[in-house]
Image (tube, rainbow, N blue to C red):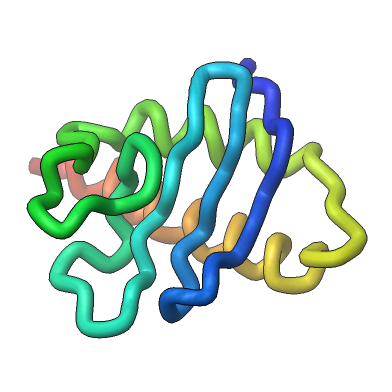
Length: 99
């Protein structure tokens, strides 16, 4: 299981930065972004060179670890984020199985 060290909402429109024992990952939610919801290694670069392709398994591992992470400052938005990402991942997994 990935160890979550920190969770932060960034001021770029809502990108989620997650610091783990395996590195820093960001779920993109920048204003006017064409890759909203996608996972990056570190903060999303303008050229998308650090976009993680085929990231479903890593996303699942991160979200699974986040379920047990507690952060008083961001708990409400954090819980919403985890719930919405789990819903999206489930839909993707079901779609992959059906195709």
